[in-house]
Length: 112
Image (cartoon, rainbow, N blue to C red; front, top):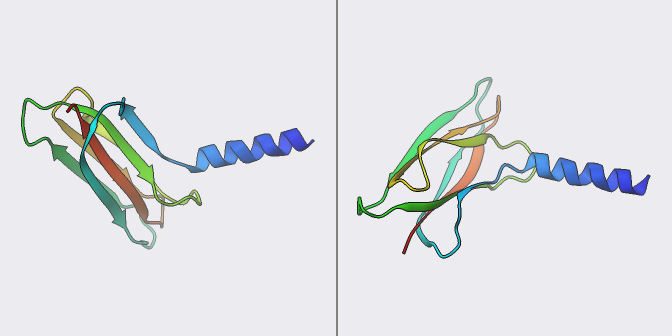
């Protein structure tokens, strides 16, 4: 019974976190770091599209991470809608849950 309870707790922790990593951050240089947040909204969802391109068009993105700053499972979701690793630009869509805000940290790493 204890094992079942521990298993359920682990599953809940994994489902409530919405951290994402695209690509490999190993031996990559942090190029961009920004908090993306929006406050509570009444009776609707919030969407924001955020883009980043490297300064040098020959420089390639190696890794994109999106960290959920809320650990209670009420944060929204984030997804890459264009670009990303092996491109020089990335566009990320952030969306809140219904009637909630969001708070993410977006990091973009490039090949040094």
